[in-house]
Length: 238
Image 1 (tube, rainbow, N blue to C red):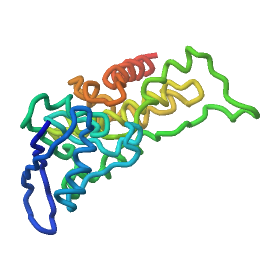
Image 2: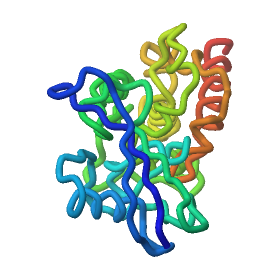
Image 3: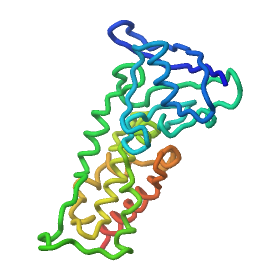
Image 4: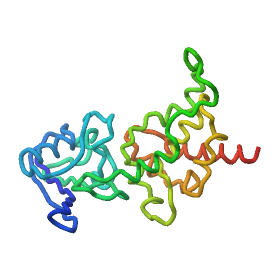
């Protein structure tokens, strides 16, 4: 089938403003959007810029907006976003982050916010000589957010961040805060209140659920955030 790919482009060295460029090419319905972009770069315009790495939905490098929604280009098939000949696929960079060039964005603020929640285990006791032991039930408490690949699709989709009316550490950082706070090996809620109980922490989430809808790993991000909110409130009232 033949499709038209409309790509939002930006090269500050040549044009101060972003512009849209269209490419027409033959593809298979089972081709991935990443394959389409690679084909365009190799055969039509070598200056096209985008990120990719593992190409298997693990690294999160190729997150972008495809037909209006945050997706991983390596996990999105042509048939998912185009059905008939001459259908258009619109590709844009992620929102709420500075565009470096074409589909590549600067994730600096995203990772700065991520670091704010201390995304690592802070043991509540001296490590044992052999290994920490947890029950399956204890592991299940934080299993969901461990699947995060830091693609920043959730950050791009968040209306709170896009509006900019209040500071918000972001969905990914908030979900990871839950991942560590609910880990029985960690200092938990009490030891992390300074990072979590702030105006720009989990309290800033307005429950739009966009983050959960676009997460390529199926993480229940909003649920994790709300569970953390309730746990913080319960801890402060106890």
